[in-house]
Image 1 (cartoon, rainbow, N blue to C red):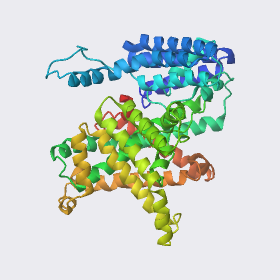
Image 2 (cartoon, rainbow, N blue to C red; image 1 turned 180 degrees about the vertical axis):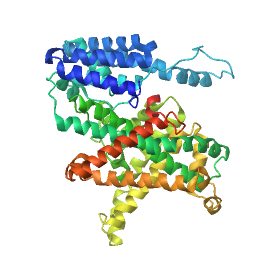
Image 3 (tube, rainbow, N blue to C red; image 1 turned 45 degrees about the horizontal axis):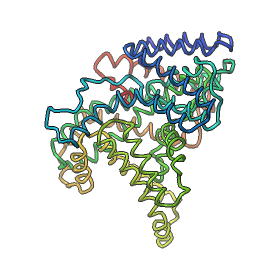
Length: 488
C-alpha cells in the first residue's frame, strides 16, 4: 500500500480514528492491528516471517533483560539477524565461496534457487536490534507485553523504508494517551504534502532520465566526461528528493497520529564537510551505526589508528546494509576514506585559510566547501548506482578529467524532452533548494504561520492541487518512479 494512493489515505483516516478514540490501555493494540494489515496487504507472502521476527525480538528482549549477559545479547542479535542474512546475503556469500573454491560458471557449492527479500527486512531488523540494544544497555526495561514490542518492530509509517526509531524514543510515546493536537497534526500534514511534492515534481521527473542515462554511460565505458558529471549531479538530487520525500511523509504520518519520529535528513547538501554530511544524511541509520557499532568498537577513544579503522568498519557495514554487492561496499568504503582524509587534512586546511587570510566562515569559503562536498558525494553515488565497480571507477576517472567536447556536444540537453522541460525542472529544483536553505533557520510551518491568511491558504490550496495533479499523472504517463530505499 503506497503512501501516495487513495487506499492509503482512507487507511490513514481509519487509523487516526482508531488512534484517538481507543482508550490509552489498548491504543497500541489498534495501531499494531493496523500495522499488520498494512504489511499483509503489501507482502502477505512474508507475513508469517514478520510475526516470527516480532516474537523472536520479544523473547530475546526478555532473556536479555533477565540475564544482562553479553552472550545473551549476542545470541538475540544473531537470531534477529538470521532472516536478514539469509534473504539478503545468502546468494552473495555463496557466490564468494564458489569463487574461493574455484567453481566454474554454472557450478555452485550450494544451490539456493531464487531468493526474494521481504519488504522492509533491513529496516525491521535494525528496529528489532535497537530494541534489544536499548534493553542490554539499560535504557529501557524488557517489554512484558509482546504487542508493544511487536509494534516497535513493524509500526506501519516506517516499517518499509524507515526512519529507524530507537525503542527508548518510540515505546514511551505509544504508552501515552493520544491527545489530538491541531498544530501537530497540521505540521504532519504539511510534512506529508512537502514530501509528496518532492516525489512528484523532482524525483519522478528525474527517475526516467536517470534510467535512460545509466546504460548509455555504462556503454561509453568511462568516456563520458561532462556527461558523467551531469549524471552524478542529477542522481545526487534524485536520490535525495526520493528518499527525503518518503522520510518526510513517514514522519508526517506519525505526527498525524501524535507520535514524533526523529528527523532523517537535515539539508545534507548544505554540509561543509563529509563528516557533517553524514551527520545530516539518513540520520536514523547513521546514528544506529554510531550507537550499536561504532561506540562499542571504541569510537575515537582508542587512538587515531583504531578511530580510522572503526570508521571504515562502520562504512563497510553501511554499504553492505544497502545491498549484497561489491559496488555498495565500494561506495561505503569510499565515504569512509573521505572522512579519514578529511580528518588527516583538517590542520593543513586551517593553515591554508590562515595563510591566504580567508575567513573559513565567509560566504565564499562556505560556498566552496559546500560545492566540494556536493561533488565528492555526487561522484560516490556513481559507485552506489552503477552495478560494476570497475565500470564505476572508470566513470569517476573520466568525470575527474573530463573532455571539454563532452560539454558542448548537445548530449546533456538531449536528456530533456524540450528546453522548456529542462528549464521547468531546473526551476523546481532551485525552488526546492531555496526552501531547504530557509528551513535551515526556521521550519516551513513556522514560516507559513507568519503569512497573512490569504497567502497561507492560497499556498495550501495550490499544494493540494499540485499533489492531485501529480497523482493523476501517475496514470497518464507522467511516471511514478517508486522509492529507491524500498529495495533495501
